[in-house]
Image 1 (cartoon, rainbow, N blue to C red):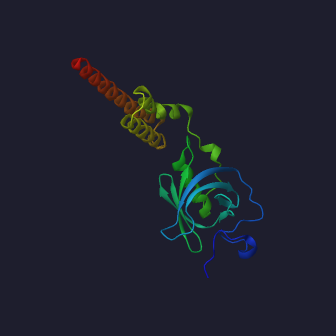
Image 2: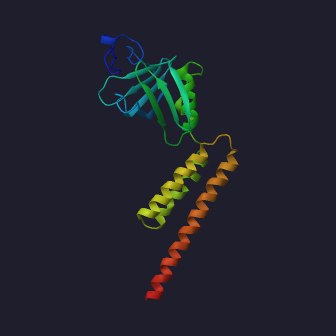
Image 3: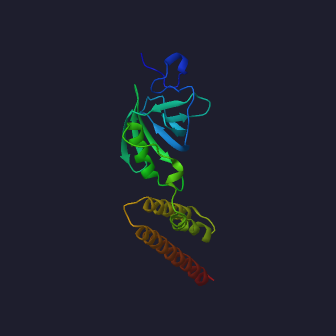
Length: 204
């Protein structure tokens, strides 16, 4: 018989997927969970991290606990997978302004039993990487909105945050790469605005 991972511990016992009487946490992150087309576990969750493992909560449902010693694998970037009794979960870690790639890798190792307990507060991006990554967001502000400038600005900001995650690169290299992307975007934006202004002047 298949176990519903959201059943209370009174009916299932404190096994994988069931919440213990108390869950001590060292911090929380947001995660997105997929479990296949027919899987019962999917959507946005608040993930508490503690010595016992991970505790995922969604709305008023009972917590889903993923204990240390579960089968877990790092999938690259900010994703890892965990296999429970009858579900394979793909978990995407979301923590703005943090090294989410390293956090996902460390969470997989911790849940799998080969890593130490990760504390989310220790994964914050340095402020200077955060600032240079956010520079492209000024493009839609400069153009006073617009779908295309907004897509360019936020898309490049996402790319810059991706560069910031590359801890194998030296910090100076990450800063220069982000600044280069932002510079090209701003130059292209100024050229576009100048062309539009020039056409308007010719029209008059």
